[in-house]
Image (cartoon, rainbow, N blue to C red):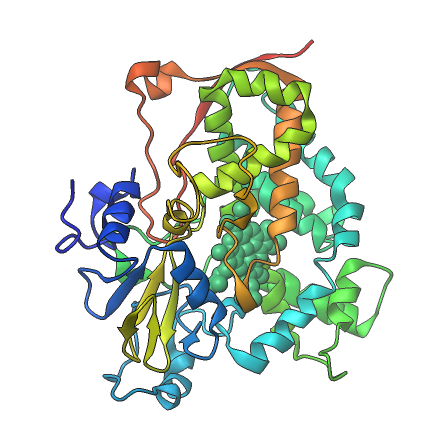
Amino acid sequence: MVDVESVDFFTEPALVNDPYPYFDELRGRCPVHPVAHPGVVSVTGYAEAVEVYRDEQAFSSCNAASGPFPGLPEQPEGDDISVLIERYRGQLPMSDFLVNLDGEIHAAQRALLRKLLTPKRLKDNEERIWRLADRQIDEFIGDGVFEVGRQYSNAFSLLVIADLLGVPDADREEFRQQLGAEVPLPNVGETAQVSRNPLEFLFERFFAYIQDRRREPRQDVLTELALATYPDGSTPDLDVVVRLATFLFAAGGDTTARLIASAMRILAENPEYQDLLRGDRRRIADFVEETLRTESPTKSDFRLVRTTTTVGGVTIPAGTTVIMHPGAANRDPRQFDDPEQFRLGRGNVREHLAFGRGAHSCPGGPLARAEATISIDRFLDRMTDIRISEAAHGPTDARRYDYEQSFLLRGLTELHLTFTASS
Ligand code: HEM
């Protein structure tokens, strides 16, 4: 067992494949506990994480995606560092992106998205998501074997968002080629390089689309996005709209691709679920939910303490970085019975925190759920006897799975499956 007092979560490779014993150990000591990284407090308890997520006043999202890297350039002092945050927030990585904004600016930009990610839009898109799933599966259905991320979920999850945003048909293939490739994440041990900017292609494309639609409105989704107004009726700058659109790919691509891979691993490891879900498709939604709980794709989510505050009886000074792990909160035994157990039909499963909570909670949750549910549905229709490839992952009693060396996301580096194509 690792020593939680000395091991650095951000740089310790031993925590990558299985971080759960570390989370349990921390939670066992205290659900709000300092970690072996200066100025960082870890929240591993469910109730405590909800408290942090819900308290926008005390916890700033300015570091939501970057955590303590690089942190503020000035040593925080006193019990209220609001002035310091406003002075330096522009210097933090991805500072203009929705997830890192606070207060009114955040609320106004989020309202722009609300029109796009409506239940109606999702319903309208559902049929196309089925087609996108089938199109990916067509490419390897004759092979009897595939690697889930590279051949299915990475491209699929990005193309679904392209479809949602109304990327014109003529550009889809280019999107597929540009976005199908793996996006590098900051590695454990390479924490200084948090600022990733794989979004240049998207930024350029959406800049051109939105500019064009503002000049010449058409009957399409991009026009709706281009002409969306703030709640007070004013028009956002072009940059704001473009950033929102591109951020959807960053926030919704990797995460959903990892969810689908985790779900497929569980399905392939447990053939009895394949029969059960094939016989009762309505239960696929439960299966996806329990996957979200047990294998939450967002591994870490951060806040900066704006005003000295108390969570779960522990006082956290202003200037502290709080690291939350949805996967730790989702295995808190005070919230979920037998939390290690994958249990289909768990009564309170939808209380999980895989999509966060509060003002920043994931607006793409319904889409991610639909993507995973439709994917499993199509796999079960088009394949039988879905198995883990022993050639790639070893025999049942000695499996080898590797997870990405990222402290932000939890995802398999590779998942090779074998199957029989349905006749
Ligand atoms: C399984 C898939 C997904 C997971 C696990 C996930 C997880 C999360 C979490 C935990 C947050 C909260 C971050 C915070 O509070 O700091 C978040 C925010 C966000 N997610 Fe997702 N997400 C997923 C899919 C998606 C999809 C498909 C989209 C869009 C199409 C999306 C768009 C967003 C956006 C825009 C935000 C920022 C919201 C805000 O700051 O107000 N996500 N997501």
